[in-house]
Amino acid sequence: MALTELQERNERLFYKLLIDNVEELLPIVYTPTVGEACQKFGSIFRRPQGLYISLKEKGKVLEVLKNWPERTVQVIVVTDGERILGLGDLGCQGMGIPVGKLALYTALGGVRPSACLPVTIDVGTNNEQLLEDEFYIGLRQKRTRGKEYEDLLQEFMRAVKQNYGEKVLVQFEDFANHNAFELLSKFRTSHLVFNDDIQGTASVVLAGVVAALKLIGGSMSEHRFLFLGAGEAGTGIAELIALEISKKTKVPVEETRKKIWLVDSKGLIVRSRKDSLQHFKQPWAHEHEPVKDLLDAVKAIKPTVLIGSSGVGRTFTKEVIEAVSSFNEKPLILALSNPTSQSECTAEEAYTYSEGRAIFASGSPFDPVEYNGKVFIPGQSNNAYIFPGFGLGLVISGAIRVHDDMLLAASEALAGLVSEENFAQGLIYPPLSNIRKISAQIAANVAAKAYDLGVATRLPRPENLVKYAESCMYSPTYRNYR
Ligand code: NAD
Image (cartoon, rainbow, N blue to C red; front, top):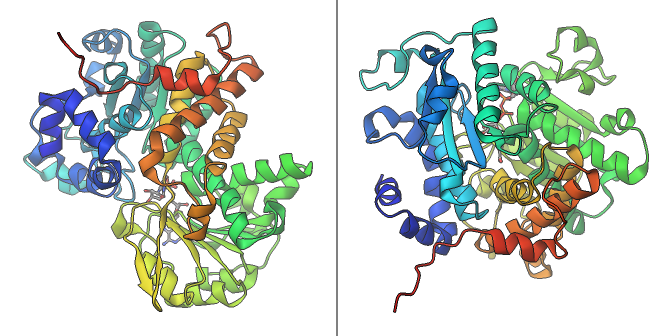
């Protein structure tokens, strides 16, 4: 709340503070505290920090957009609040997420604050507690689905393009998966859109896995991956890993997918379940007898990499971690679910139950852990590493569409920045304190890919894209007056 006040009172100082103390303040502006802020949003609400577009504005969305005082918006982060982190449906109170993500766009990616627009689409909530809360700030009705929902989203996307042009980036954030996959596939060919939960997460995890190969050995295609959670994050990561292996080995992606297994709330995803699966789970229905729970799946599949993306906390139990450690010298364990309460395990559990052998990273931060006299530093596997630089790359190249190859380019840049010193500490990501340099490198790689693919409109192509990216980044410095 104090930081929000500062952001409103002295924006430049807010960003200076955030940039200079990124490791300390990120857990407040972002996960895990942002989750708590969303849960209590109605009672801590002072002034709107973003634009609310509700069902009541249907037919007038363009007019509402025009009310926003800034004219040159480059990045919009939009949510409908239905799946806020692993906390479920928080309705209109999900606004904390677009606001927090855009603060990171500026602080970590250098996009000017005035070019950032947080939006929440209010179509109601199914959260009974909020509907009865006298401080709830949104529409007091159950979520609208079907045509009315689709029409409002369509109108919003049309209005965005009409008002800000072809090159404005729309980042979808924390939509429930039944809408998230639809929206992405519907608008990716007509708009510059990016789903952070599906694509940003995929890119950051791929980077972590590529970097981790130095510690766990082997090539990507030699590893077996098991996911707990087969939603936006899980299937998005799985698909990008399969694509990367396919590109590296020239084996078709239909084949490389077979290295990857997913467990959802009903057990291992296998061929016999295919007809009853949601479409995004179907490519992962491989031939195998049914397996009911994660522990049995670990024993059956014998993964070398275990990834948690179910939003359910404490699911990597002692038995699960011991099992995965029993057939791997160095198991790679990624507990991606946010906020901290939903993490599949703590860093301490990962190191203790694996007897100090696990290479571990998590979505929300954990403090270093001492085990058997040795200090282990857990890394943070969070899309905050990717989306600010990724978005910056799109903005500086004037890209008009997002392509999967750009996600691979972002991963490659991030993985390449892990130093020997980081590896020696067991880290698979570079420290967040260097994030602005990291973002510039990611932006340059993404922009280069946009030029190669012919979707960049800023011509001529700058010679040194890293320098160009750095020169475009907003810095909260005060001018000198004589
Ligand atoms: P989602 O709702 O799309 O997917 C959740 C999946 O988990 C679904 O397939 C569901 O069937 C499965 N599931 C639910 N309960 C389960 C259980 N008990 N056992 C096994 N599977 C179960 O959500 P999502 O967008 O994929 O996000 C999931 C989690 O990942 C959230 O906590 C989110 O905060 C986190 N996340 C982290 C990052 C990051 O950068 N670290 C990025 C995106 C999402």
